[in-house]
Each structure stands twice: as C-alpha cells, then as structure tokens.
Amino acid sequence: MPPQRLVRFGVSIDSDLLQKFDKFLDHAGYGTRSEAFRDLIRARLAEERIQNPDAEAIGVLTLVYNHHQRDLEEKLTDVQHHAHHQIITSTHVHLDHDNCMEVIMLRGTVGTVRSLATALASFKGVKHSNLSLTSTHDLK
Ligand code: NI
Image (tube, rainbow, N blue to C red; front, side, top):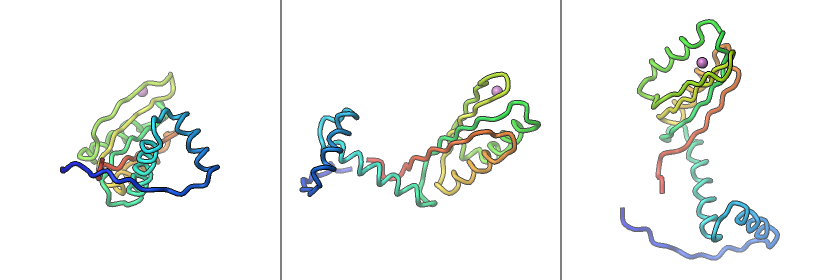
C-alpha cells in the first residue's frame, strides 16, 4: 500500500468543548490533539462498520453459566462444533463451585457472529453474556 499523504485541516470548535477534549487528552495520555482526533475518527468509523451485518468482524463472547444446568455444556459445545468455521478459539474457566465462564472468539460477518452469539447466550442456565465486536475491514 502506498504511504498515506498527511493532510492538515482546520476545525472550528466551541471553546468549552475544546477544553473538555483537552482534559480528555490529558487523562487518556495523548501527546497531541491530532493523535486523539485520529483515534476518535477511527473508533467512530469502526462503530459505524459494525452496524453493517455484512461487514467482516471478530467477536469476543463471554458467557457465565450455571455449571449444574443439565446438558448445557453439551449444547454449547454442539453449537460451536456446528459453526466450527466461525470459532477461532475458546477458553473455559471454572469460576467457582457453581459457575463457569467461557470466552469464545468468533469470526465472520457481523450478522453471523451476532446470531451465533445469541444462539449460545440464549440457552437456559446462561446467567450473563457479553459480545464485543471489532470490525476487521479497512484496518489502518
Ligand atoms: Ni467449568
């Protein structure tokens, strides 16, 4: 890929808003406004991309579930085997006597990752689930 050309442009901004932005920069440890501004743009564009169900994405699904729930582990494993091409890896943690946590990394389109995550999270005995999606398209 050819090197990107750096473009400078002016931004008009409310002084109050700029003050808040500068406070955020300090807090977050940014050296310059430019770097923080670039990161905010990238984050917003990535957020936009994961609204598109056809965009390629990586998902990290965390499930906390009842270890004693009948057949649950088997059901979770069955779904993952069925969608093996979408599962990158998974880690199982025995949280305590009663609870397990599984962290599953998934890949595919936003739509397929979301529906697989929903299928896994909706089984009886799953107490908590969280899906974090990252678009893998156009990473710069
Ligand atoms: Ni366990």
